[in-house]
Amino acid sequence: MGLHFTWVFGFGVLGNITSCLVCLAPLPTFYQICKKKTSQGFQSIPYVIALFSAMIWLFYAIFSENAMLLITINSFTFFMETVYISVYLFYATKKDKILTFKLLLLLNIFGFGLICALTLFLTRGKRRVQVLGWICMVFALCVFAAPLGIVRKVIKTKSVEFMPFSLSFFLTLSAVMWFFYGYLKKDKFVAIPNILGFILGICQMVLYLIYRSPGKNEVGEPRIRELSEQYRSDISIAMPKLNEGASEVSEPGFAKEQT
Image 1 (cartoon, rainbow, N blue to C red):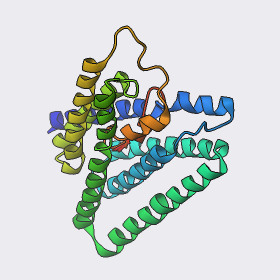
Image 2 (cartoon, one colour):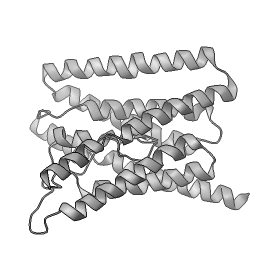
Image 3 (cartoon, helix red, strand yellow):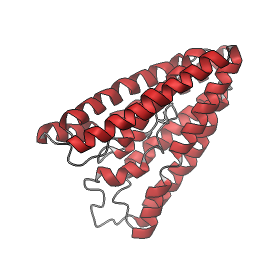
């Protein structure tokens, strides 16, 4: 029993570390935004989705048993995504600000509020955990499916300019850690979505090796508008990898996307 707990804790800690690295990936992009004092046409969608993912996983973890490691990573993700969105709103154009406020109102206020109200008043005990788990898992699966857009783009253009290998690698590694955490903890809502995250991550790395051009600097500075399609390959389920659309290194949605 003690050994089993050690393995669960170990994978949870590793999942926290890898997910934190993915979550911090957009920092160079926001440094440039602050330096140039303009959002440069970047999209806020990945960060709004990542924030929503962190919120629902936090809500799930609060009612779940022994989910402190889910709480830690999603609390960190919640804080970072709030900072990203605040900086974005400060430097964005009026049109982008209005769109971002609409997304926050629709998804993070109305959507999350509806989930809270329905689960708090219509469910109790383990039933509540099950309902929240299904909601989190379905959302995570949808987010993990987002990279299919960038995969199609890579195959069509035969270029990996918008799919950095390092991001795909860390998102895949994060999915592996959270899968084993969920599997050992017997939490299917954490484990199952990360199977898809692992498969898609492997596919992205294989495509990178196939289409990369050794003589070219194909990564350069990927545009956020293109990378946002890749959002949520993530990360770890705890950390919705929505950060993928953020910078030249990034954006999973846990997830994540996340978790």
